[in-house]
Image 1 (cartoon, rainbow, N blue to C red):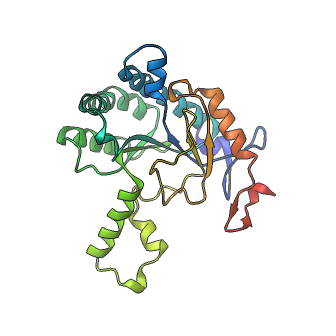
Image 2 (cartoon, helix red, strand yellow):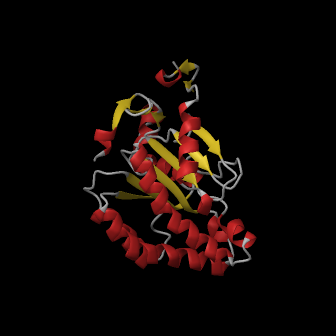
Image 3 (tube, rainbow, N blue to C red):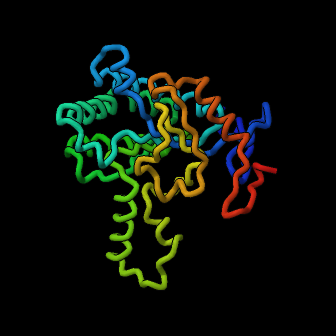
Length: 254
């Protein structure tokens, strides 16, 4: 069953045919708490990253079942390069290995994969693997997974400004629409809901432009424990919100 069969489109997401609950079209995740989850179990922090990676498939599958069309995961920030060298190397290797082992299954599940962030700063082999995953799944029309790897919201805005300058954009033509066209990846709607696990409330330089009117949800559950029930809680919270855009109530709140 496709997402189109499961849901009916609305102005601010999708309305479930089963319970009339408003479903966000795009959910973005700050996957926090992997390291603390492992330390609480007296395990190396790296085990937390492994558990967090394994949880992505479970969350993605349930999001699609609920009718969510886009999911962005904050996998590695531009600031993460300052972490201990061993941890950074492990994270880079973990992504490379997961691309080899997971992309085939995701492709068979009709998942479309996109990358958001600076590819040029990544190791050449990893960059190539990411490009191959994007190309392989480009025609899939199931849920879209956007992997924000080597991503930072401020860096993204700066990069967009540089591209506009290089294009010779006149000052009078520089507006929000022009900027939005340069934000990566193109064609993805702004997130309706931003979820942060691990109990923190910071936005941490994530989707600064795109999340201007997103609803925010924080849960104490660390990412490895963010299961189907936690997804449902986040969607329920979103559905109960009165969304306002510059003081104008959305259809969701009426």
